[in-house]
Each structure stands twice: as C-alpha cells, then as structure tokens.
Length: 414
Image (tube, rainbow, N blue to C red):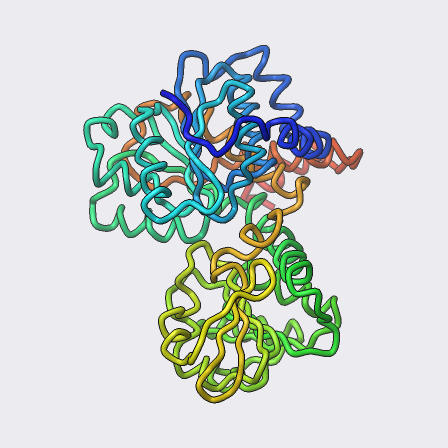
C-alpha cells in the first residue's frame, strides 16, 4: 500500500526527533536488540493507531526490527507531527496521516490502516477497533489480537465485550501497573502542564486549578499543579476518589461550585460534557479550559458556541470564546488531548515503559494465537519484566526473596 502523508522531504527533521527519544528509551533499546536476533514478528503485519510523534515512531521501528511489516495511522489529527511521519516512511514503514486532518481525512486514514489487513494491532481510544468491527468483518476474522493503550479505549472495549460484540482478544495495556502508575500519573501530570504553560505563557502559582476527575491522570495533573504553586480543587462523582483527593490535601466540591473560582480547568474523565453549559456560564473572565482525556467531548464546545457572541483565534492552539455576558473563555487545542495537540506528549522515559508493555503484549498474543474474544490483562510477568528493565537502566538493584521466605509466603502453615 502507498503511504498518504504530507511531505517526505521533512524526514531529516523527523529523524532528529526520533534519534533524541531513542537515546532516552532504554527499555525499547533492549527490546530492539533482542528483536533483531529473535525476529518474533517475522512474516506478520502490525498496524499501529496512536499519536504519531517521535516516541511512537521509535516503537514502530522496534517492531519492524522484529521482522514485522508495519503501517501506522493517527489516533488524533492534531498530535501528528508531519516530519516524524516522513521519517517513518523513510525508514520503510507505511503511514496514513498528516497534521490537521479533517474529520473525513482522519476517518479515511483509519480505514486505510484497516485495509492493510494486520495480523496484530495497537490502538489508542478504540477508533481502529471500531472501524474493524463495523466495516471489515472479513479482515477481522484473521486478526490474532490487539492492544489498547487508553482508559477511554478500554471503556469502549469492555462495553463491546458486555454486548458480545468483541470478536478478537484485546489486551488492556492501560490497566498494567507499569502503565497507569507512571504513564497516567507522572506522564500526564508533566505533559499537561508543559503544554498549558508553553501555550499560554501564563503563571500557575497562586492561581486556582480545577481538576475534573481524580483517576490516575487526574491525580498526576493535580499533583503537578500543587507543585507549581496553585490552589487545587478536585471535582468527582466517585465518593472514594473524592475522599482520596481530600486526604491528598485538595479541596473537593461540585463543579458548579468550582466554576466561578477556577483560573484553569482541566478535564480528565473519559466522559462527555463534564464541563457543560451551566458551568461555562458561571466561569470568571479569562478562565482557561483544557482537556486531558482522549476525545474532544469532555468540554461541551456546542455550549461554548451558544454562550458566545463571537469566536476568534488567539495564540496558536488557543481559541477565544467571547461570551454574551462580556467575559472571555480560552479553549486550548480545540478541546482535544492538550498534552499532544499543544505539546509533545509524555516524556520519553515514561513512554518507554508503556511501549515496552505494548511490544511485549504483541509477542504474548503471537505465542497465544487461540485466545477467546475478550479483554485481557497484561500478564504479570510482562509488567514485572518492564519494571525490571527500567530499574536496570537506572542502575537500581532490589532485593530478592530467599527460598525460605518464598516458602513462608506460599504456605498457610506457620
């Protein structure tokens, strides 16, 4: 299949970015060296539907080093970096993506990826999974399995499984300890604020940040806001998470009460319209809105339009909504995943863990080709191996149980 990209001549810039992250991803370095010898994906086709920036590109190249024929498409039209995609194509990987794709172009690119007829795939948010199930049943029946990276995607997968609609085994990579402890918490926490600060060039210290949702991504976002000197309010629907936020030192209240207080609002729920008309109408002048969930549905953009007398572009990645009440609200990155639509995403060292899980989960699927259609956890031994590889790269050693201690833990006899 022929690639559909913006401009192949951008490849040299993309290679610079890929080589930079490669120098800071020791887990993938180790797996690349191993895969070049063992060729676990020899003769297989692997499709990747993720944010197409340098870290993803390097993972694609590692899988290709393992013998796979690889094709990629974007999981978000604003996170695609055209120079990185050009470098991927330059390295022999097929790509269907460009930055700023229209809704029609974006969907067409995912259909092109489905028509690649993969044996295995990696998804982010469930778009490729849905397209395969809804439009390509004849291709789907030959797929060994796939992996899903995000909370949002796993919500969709479990819904499909509950409705008996899921036709292939899927590994819930997001639920691995080495993923959500680090990627969701530390990765999101750092990359969200990196994107917000570089986009707005405004101070955070002394201001009030409202974090909508206190899952692992919300925890990281709130923790980093606190570290930057902000006053933090958390809004939640789960009483246990609300109590956890309170004991972590944050104010907890309904969003309608927080709406007039916040200078920054960050949604991290995976749900739609969590910031709705009534919240937007109550916000102060010059409040900043950002979303760190997968889809651009958490902030109700239709409600924003209804409340506005005019809408104008501000700085890059900022849209100014001038409300009929005289106030202005600023929406970052069109309400899409802010850390990638307005930034470079999670740090390379963090994504090294997640992409280590992804690649090894694909190998696990290859070794278990007859799994029933269901959502599976990442095997514990893969989770542990990725963590050990990371510790080894950091020159950190840990203790081991003695045989006597193992026997004690495995016995009910005292």
